[in-house]
Length: 96
Image 1 (spheres, rainbow, N blue to C red):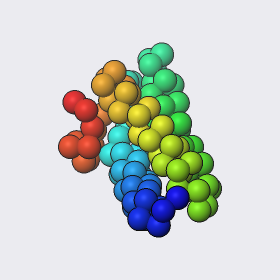
Image 2: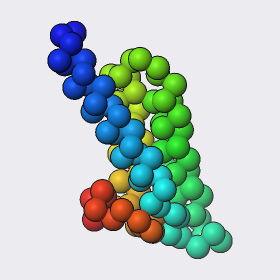
Image 3: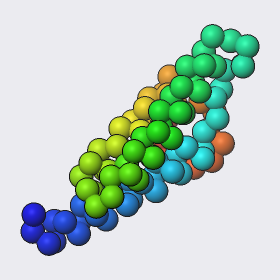
Image 4: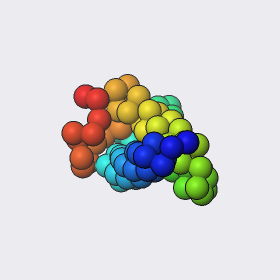
């Protein structure tokens, strides 16, 4: 891969890592804990956290890390659209 593309990929991977980290901190499950949908919201939030860890574990493989960060954010954003999360910060990063 040409150096300029590698630099762009590294920058984009870092940007998406920060986005996913910000998204995780900005959400909390919306359903009441006693309802059947609360575990679904908790599971999606756990999936976002797991994707952040997997992406971080990729080391120098920026393409794989970017894939994990995008995957994790996609699940969280879908959860927001489905009404599973309450947005407590950074509302502008989600599709609402």
